[in-house]
Image (cartoon, rainbow, N blue to C red):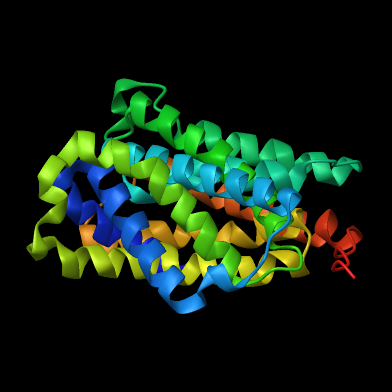
Length: 274
């Protein structure tokens, strides 16, 4: 999470140079090259079922990144991550049964309501950015579910294939946005830092972790993302967030922690394939 949110702040620095689509393409392409070189996925044989899961996993990842970076053009990083968190939190709360479980749902909904731009005093909270962040959240849910399926019996090489698939999806949007500017050598150091911190390192760690825990538990363990995003946005990008938005982020995080103590504890981890 630390790598992801620091990388997102660095990525926003690329927007004036190549736009959100260009930054997404640069990030995923460089990350794919690094992961493929390190984990050499061609050495592993995948069956048709796992290939389908890998393609869905990579497709969800590519769409998630495109929507998320597009949202960052309109709203602060901390708000974007909190809204995007609808995806993993929905996965975490899926199948809630007890009354206390629905308390976390109500708390999460209240938190999201505080993040929405109900009035003109919403400051930098653009409705377009809200919609894009929510779309990214839906893709994040798919990333968790398909990532778990793709990673069963696999390893970090699955992340390399997934990021490669995501890069193929993002490159056309990047070329349409930035064109030949993507090939500027001056962008390489910042682009490589973004690729490593936002994609290569966290996605490889995710792929190692996902097969060993329930997808709902993984989703709620991401509860620290909004706070880390807000801190990264403040320190690196000098973005500020109002009291109502901070309260909303706190409510979402509290809902995740509460779900960890009730829903996830009752869910046994999946067994690996024999």
